[in-house]
Image: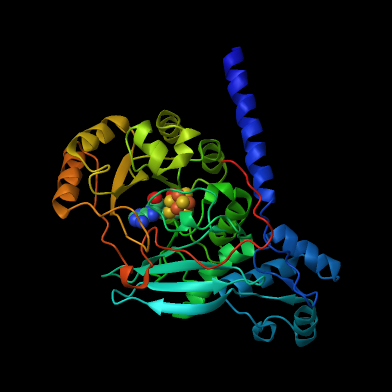
Length: 397
Ligand code: SAH
Ligand code: SF4
């Protein structure tokens, strides 16, 4: 192997370790409650097996519990009718089946529903359910962190410094609690229509800076004997954490969305400061390497339309050139304002022209209708009052 390739491999490994070490500084709370009981939600099958073995129960119980927790959606051991009463009681003494607490639930005039969830340590994050306007299906937009380490200039979440990562129980829990709100249990099987039909990791935070918890949560959600959403129904959005894109592609294989927003490094350095670390060329190269992308499973490029900033015809043409040959589509997101935001939404004419140039080049470029703006539930509007209690640890991106 030529030395340069080795150097890149080494750098990537070091980079991964650095990112994971950084993640550990912001760990979520332990699975144990104040009374010593442990939350079973968010444990994988091995962990569940170990918990059960520790109280003298056989491995077949894992399958039973999994079914009740993730397929039936019960939160009360006494409703587990295939489990005898003494064991139900023994389980209830030691475990809980937790949910984040929906402290505020708002429904928009367009039926989008936003949840403010409070977790066990009092920290809060938002989750949004976006129903399809016509069919019985919809997307659950899930948060991966409380706040964000990155500070994209147009994003409200970016003004909230990272408080902490969300744990797997909290990530899966957002989906389960949203589903409680619609009473959609037991989990619909296979292709049966479902209201909560897709997951988009597009809420608060950068999912690839909390990869361990996000990937564990997504494996639980994908398990066919529980919630059973296939990887094709999950989309992970990243602002471009290049080394982790490779890992997510190899290990999870979910759909990828990339927050591009600019076609020159000069502008992207300003709008998405992470670009200074992973510039556009590296980002596009990582997209070209992303496994499993095809015309049926295209990579989505998100492009927020900022008036007079990134919305010219020349930029639309440059975008086409940049992503040429990739199985891709472009989501044009009219900028959603928030209190104190510096930008304006592009004019409808500019958005339409931009969209036409990209679609004339054979790349689908739909304009996203903003959803839930009246309750501040649209892309980039999420933020909570949670703060980091300890002195913020300053970690460069
Ligand atoms: N951190 C991840 C995922 C969360 S943001 C990421 O950045 O990709 C989800 C999407 O909303 C991103 O494409 C983000 O750039 C976009 N977004 C952020 N603020 C916005 C705003 N004010 N208006 C429209 N879209 C915005
Ligand atoms: Fe973080 Fe994404 Fe917002 Fe950027 S756009 S600040 S990465 S949540």
